[in-house]
Image (cartoon, rainbow over all chains, first blue to last red; front, side, top):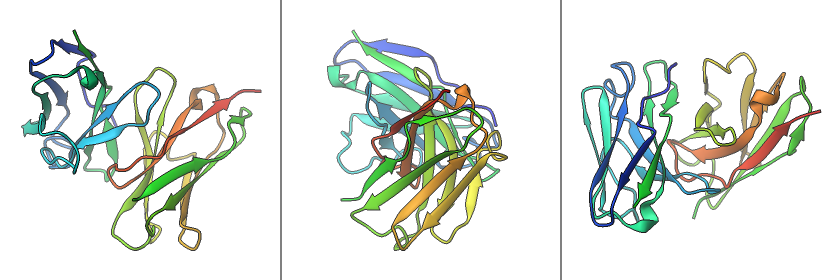
Length: 110
Length: 115
């Protein structure tokens, strides 16, 4: 199975909004509403930020939102804060009953 | 609050079998309809799903690792385990266990493959 495609890096200034894309195929992202997003700070375990495309777990700020169109899912962070600087990964369930991750995106807050 | 903790050797020799256990606390591994999974992250690289197991024992593996991976569950100990055979340096990574898809995660454990 091929990894989902994410941009290697994105950046934004405090207060701005950024969007990270996650592109797959009709056998994963496009075929199921089981896309998740994870935030990982250096040396830490990943943290679930969005599940089932657009749902936020309890405790995750509403600045984080998710969406999907066709084979591409997106994570949007509005009102960017310094603490949002981290690596972000998407994942999707697949038609083979497996899970595939994206390659990760490094978010820099300028 | 559900917590997961990985345990096992931090150093494994090439060609040997890597064995890790994930201990679940704060909840029963069999009390709800969740899958339990293993994910790894080579140093400086991205996340890779290894496989998942249902409390009943049904397993699903990454096709690229399937021939070398075995995931099992021990409900009496509230644990699930990973075995990866015939390891090479390419299997050096931080190994994480996690519930479902995926939340929460264990803290991760670094496994180095070296003679």
